[in-house]
Image (tube, rainbow, N blue to C red; front, side, top):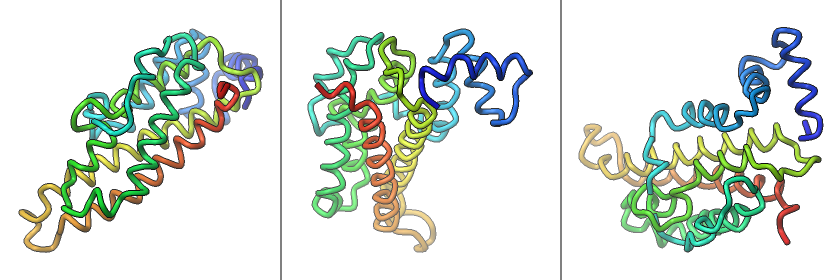
Length: 210
């Protein structure tokens, strides 16, 4: 669904008392009526990050200066920041063997922004929320796809956090059935998921790549 189509569809859904696209879509429609994108996103993000509230806190890899310059009302101002985040995840994936050779989960967590505050990803949640309610989203933007990919991104980051954090304790628990290496391996699957979801978001917002 495109931005230009969103408002009349929401109105129709509300007028008919909700409907055919499920409770999640009804939430979107209801909050859209009040123009409260942030409320919808807060609810969606809360579901995704229930197991890892630390994703709003933070790590180091690609400088996060672009985030400081972002204007909350303009999605365009976040585009360089999103590209920095994508570069960070790409670097993590490309250098995985070197980064994880000590099987220290915190090395991964530094890249996703849950250890330290120098990775741009430590501000990904509020940044995505700001983009959702920005004034300058293109009329032809596929809003549903943006919402879906944003939730995929947050959920993947939660999963990376859970697996990499667990790696720090695996060798001391589980009665020998678990190992840090196992959790590190699982973490990479979710790193790739996060990278792919963010790449899709960047692509959806490519109109801002000027």
